[in-house]
Length: 311
Image (cartoon, rainbow, N blue to C red; front, side):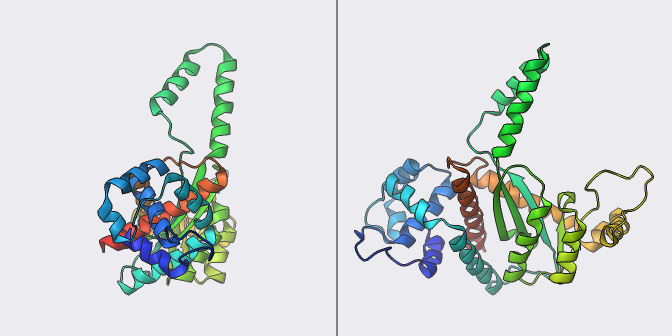
């Protein structure tokens, strides 16, 4: 909470208007929202938690506990992509001052992951699939597939650019739906290069595209390493026609060459996705797609604050 309060105090005024009641300051409310993500609580849950922990309120200067309606309105007004991106700039600056980011030694890893739009029971999903599988009627199977496709189209998705040396998130992009990954490569890499010195970027086959290689190598001066496995495989075993994808085919042909070029560090991004889901939860609490994307960005920022606080 103290790190979140200090971070918000750099970008937020104490009050939105001179006519505000001035019961709480905006940095204090933002710190409460970060605490909500850290503790995996609802608005009512974090209200009860702060009521039971007066020492936590004293750390950020709260005289009394904000109620759940106040926190809900604070989320709507405070958690915005522009503000979160500026906070990411400051967090990365803190990490560079502590010498946590080593861009020249270990590469930047990019990956994405789907989150649950609400809390679900895995046992219930498994039983539904078993029922549709055992049934002889084809209509149930078709309905189950259609239901699953509708669910996937509404799932929130978080794309991350991770510093492999310290598991710090340098850039995050939140979208909706389980579509292709390669359109998110350019904006995530651009934000990461703007915040830190990136020499090498590694990504999985979902980001495979000749245009992504040209953007990284020619426009941003970053060496990109992506396996050329996207699209329909060639039956004759011929290499890809485009220049950079054909070069990736030769570079990633053997295990020693993958280790030398740094592609094996790509799994650090999957580690960060696992850390976020284990520590902060894999299910979101917001009801709309926009607020779910904002909640994902706040969750990524909370992860960075946890890394900074421990170092």
